[in-house]
Length: 341
Image 1 (cartoon, rainbow, N blue to C red):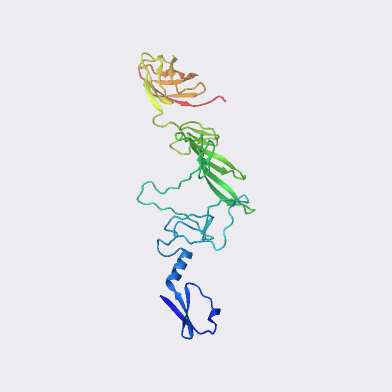
Image 2: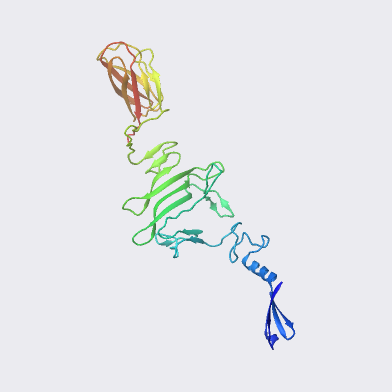
């Protein structure tokens, strides 16, 4: 198929044409023809459009890639709704290199980046991979290596982007196929300061204001831990306590390896003002701890307190101040963990 354009010329040799244009003589006139099929093929080769077999999906660069296939980009991609160019990615006035993608939104509007997921209970996932070596020759992650960082930045009076807060993850040991200890950490700036400091780390325990791992499930802090709940407070939960009943006499020792609990005393008639002592064997107690006791119930009125503390035990002494009837009072106790340094 072709489109012809007739023209007259005395010097056809001066006219140069090449495919998809054709020059032919008709009488004393000359005709230019355009081969549409050849033209379409040429355009398709340049723009990578046409049939699926002819399209260069999976490539990029000077050709236009299809977005319904995999594409490899060799340079930073900028996606922006802003009317003007986005500021160069930087931190503290230093330009950041190796930026793979840069996103921006319209000035005066809030930017969003959505990941949709439907029909799968795991939800959308964003994965970060980190290791030593190279992409082609990866080696094991080492203790102290950062696994992930999420930075927030703002601008100061000198108009330079600075870190406001950081949270991320790090390796706690040299990784193998079976040992992959890791932690989350959170950094923020102190009011009136311009340097980020680690505030929280979650490893085997939770550390607030300290980088010393307190152990599995423990919480360590360098400042006070307070409760503002009017009916909650700070204390022990279900599972921390236990109960035991004294046998034989009120001087008979009991064993209860819990940080809190209730001790039911042997049934007896007390003598007012006569002090009695017994030992509570408890592996949860350190010599520096502070056990506290109180009488929960009893027919008579008692007073009592802790008269000795040792590693693995403490002693309770008590007496009746009102009443001599036989009863079995209950003593509540709780251990306050303490140190001497």
